[in-house]
Length: 109
Image (cartoon, rainbow, N blue to C red; front, top):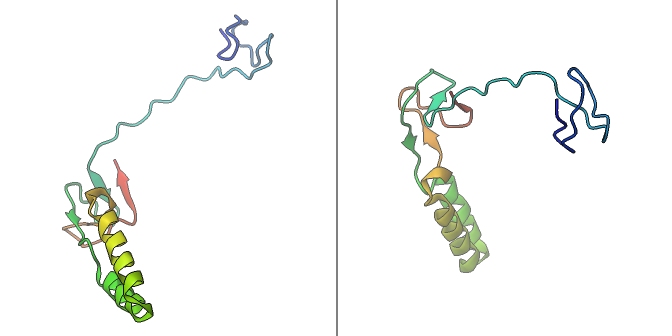
């Protein structure tokens, strides 16, 4: 067995390298499960494409209006920043079309 750190050959079954004392992993590597691009809903088990949430949610409008009380600039900056971030489809919430759950706990199966 060769050391992954220094490359020195060690006896089979050795737990540390004789040269640099790096721990040697003699256990076979576990196979990584295959991942799919489609998320699975943990609420109902739906596997498929999810609906995208809106760019601006009702709470964003409320926060924007509250910030407008302190001045026009903070409200405009908030709404503009949120809209710019969520214009990317990967940054929007995804909604299960079957049970209407949001993507808080989804798994790539």
